[in-house]
Image (tube, rainbow, N blue to C red; front, top):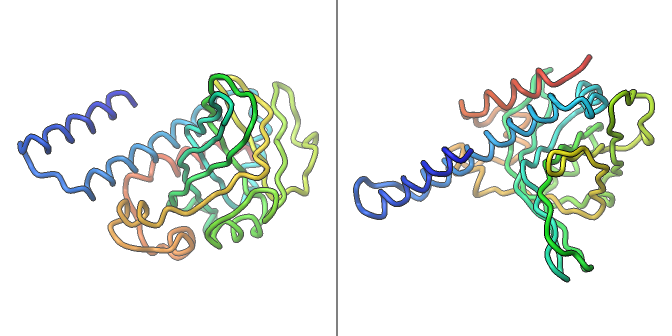
Length: 230
């Protein structure tokens, strides 16, 4: 990830110096490819972590998944959380192309320091996927959400709310943690999707109608397929 960030910085500096022209769209597409690549790393991290065997079992039956590589939370006195992520849906038995979204929620409280979490939300019902696709979606209000259990030896049957539309999982600083996302808002980033795919397309068309594609999404989709425990 550091190497990629350095490359982007070097490209920007070279473009600014006039060494070769770089369009704003090309820079935006490179940044969003970095998000896709980071999402793949997040999926791999969850897959290797034995605390998330339960998550992998449920992933096999999920209708969709929302992956946030970095959810940044907390500051002094006035805190907040937010991060960019990608939404994918199961389409004809395969994982779709990803659509770019942001997730954010504000909070007031005594919060000193911050946390960076990797987050995966499993969308267990068509209702959950459809709610997000309606544009701006509030977790807990538009679909029910429950924190998925974590820990070595956890069995799928022990999940406390098997009827929940969404199961949430997070890793914070390498640790498996219980995680609540009630009240968080997920919003489509239409301009970023257009920059990444080279043309405008609604998230529903990206997920279900194969309206656009980018070869850079292949490793993420394959990682999700391999993460499933059946």
